[in-house]
Every structure is written in structure tokens, then in C-alpha cells.
Image (cartoon, rainbow, N blue to C red):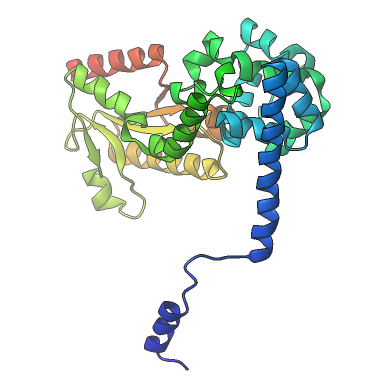
Length: 324
């Protein structure tokens, strides 16, 4: 048996720092080179023929990596494309429907909305003419559609612009910057929907605390959880508010709903006069409606971050605080 010191020295002295599979790296470099060559051919085509929709329609139809190449050019990720595709499927907006030829590829209303996979979208692009043309229209004109400009963050909607398709240096620099800053942008505290609730409560002068509830620490320590908002304070909570905004789907959503149901039961037992409120929003919940139904059952009331719902939340909190 080797000593801990010997095992420790093995990790230090024989550390590879980065795992490097030469065969995989070589194969993937071929894939990257294929994307580069596809974009170079596209750039030449645009330089000769101009930025025309048919150029991009033909690219999507005839090139295996056509869609991936356009996503690379515009800086749109696969995940963002999936979110936008889901949004198109679930929203009934005349201008948007016409832009993407929706009636020609989504003929029947879907009862159980499930997010399409990357393969599903790629197959639709290859095999469905109307869907393919609709995707090109989206890249050309998506930023002009009011429902999209109101729903999709500005950081992302600026990628749906004809200016991104012309290989112009300023736009390509913009794409590089947005790609570089995507992670930082996503992680910014100000993008957290909880900030909206904080600002609302400060605006109306209602206090709140975060953290653990005293009675749960004493009576259900293993089951408790840190609360997002305790209004107005931990000593005399009138509202407990939990936020769950999901922009993506996750296998953990079922577990999340079970946890919230358990917390709701604990609050009913130890804080029977306190209202348990949930802010449940985002397309991730929209497309997992079975989990959503279980989730909303945990709360006394549920709100979204829609302006109407924020106003309703404000009115309810002010009324209850003033009457207590």
C-alpha cells in the first residue's frame, strides 16, 4: 500500500493539467475547419450576389453544417435557438406566425409542449421547406417583430439582425464580444429576477429578510431551506416568497416541485398564518407542465414577473401588511 505522501506526489508530479485525446482533437479540428470553409464559401457568395434570403435557404438545405455555420456567424447558441423555437411554437402572434410560416409546419396545436432537441430542429431545417424559410426569415427580420423584441433580452435579440449576416467587420467584432461576454452576462446579479422583487419591496417601503426561519431551525433542521424573501422579518413572517425562474428545462424540475411541496407543509405546520408565495416563471416551466402543476400546488398563491402579476403582488402585500 502506497503512503498518502506517495499518492499525493503522483498527482503533483504526473499531472497532465489538461486531458488531451489526440484522436478526438484531430477529428474535431476537422469539424471546425469544415465550418470555417462553409463560412468562407458563404462570404464569397454574399460578396458576389448580395445578402439574399435564397443564399441562406440554399445553405441550410445543401450544407450539413449550414445551420451551425449561421449560428456561428450570428453568435446565437444552440440553447438560444431552442428557446426561440419553443417561444414561436407556444405564442400565437399574427406577425410572428407569418414571418416563420408557422401554419405550414405546425398544423396542430400541441397539447403537451416539449422542447425540441437539436436534432429535431436540424431535421426540420433539412426536410421542411417552410420551416427552413421561416428560420431564414427569423435571422433576417426577427428583431423587427414586437413580440420577440419585448420577450427576448436585448443582448440576444440584437443577434437576430440582417446586419449580422453580411460579414462586416464591426458586426463580427460585436459577435465576438457578445460570445466572449456571454458567461459574464448570464452570471450578473442584476439579471436575477429576484432583483425585481427587491426593488418592488423597497419602492413601497416594505422590509424583508432572507435566510432560515427560526421555528424550522428548531423543529425541522434537516428539512428546512434558505428562504428567498421573508416579509417583513423572521420573527413575524407574513409572507414567505420563493422564486423559480427557469429559462431551460431540467430533469431536476420534478425534484424542485417535491421540495417546495415539503416546505409548504412545514410552513403550514409551524407558521399557519403565513402565506407561502411562489414566483414561478420562464419557458422552462412552460414546457414541463406536469412538473409545473405539482409546483404550483405547493404555494398559497403564484405570480410571474409579468407587469400585471407584479402589480397584483404589490397590492396584496401592501393590503396584508397594512391590515396586520
